[in-house]
Length: 80
Image (cartoon, rainbow, N blue to C red; front, side):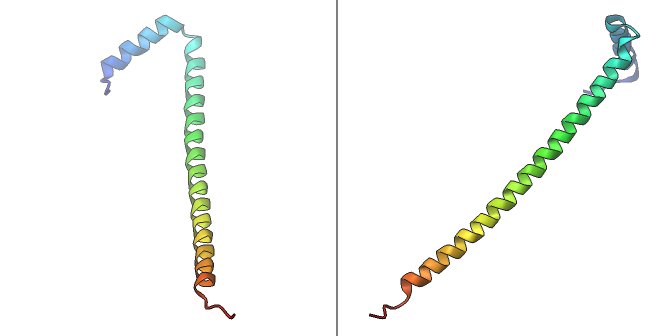
């Protein structure tokens, strides 16, 4: 949704009429803080997902190593 100049003016006038001049700065601060917290949450979620992916990759590598060792033991000739 792209607003043109006059649409912004109408929107600001409507907000001014609805909330009053004293409430608008408080609402703007609140909106800014919410936006900042949302972005921080997204970054934290991405970081957690990356960490989890790394841990899964490490666990997969360890399982592959153990599987290879088990395969070596199963295929070694009996000494009896």
